[in-house]
Length: 92
Image 1 (cartoon, rainbow, N blue to C red):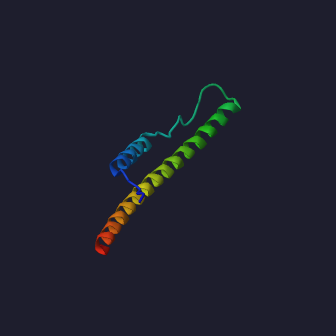
Image 2 (cartoon, rainbow, N blue to C red):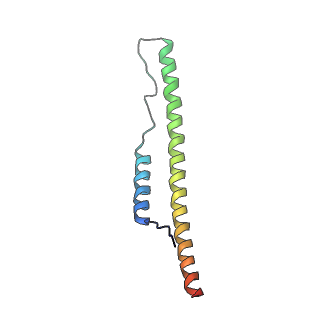
Image 3 (cartoon, rainbow, N blue to C red):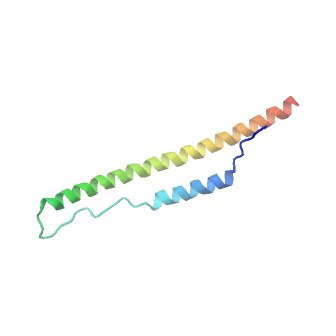
């Protein structure tokens, strides 16, 4: 019979590494570029930077949700495996 083997320690390390990478991501940019230059380009650059910062914050939140969901799935898989093992032993 084929089996699915979960190497929980490897998965947990990968999830921990992912969480650290998410936390180290700094979505902030220079808030405004100022100077003697009054070109529309500076206004547009500031607008783009603000949008990019908002995007990166949403991306961080999504990665955190994904990491937590994966962690919960691994725990559920582990519990199911233990329950199946118990049921198989009882049936023998």
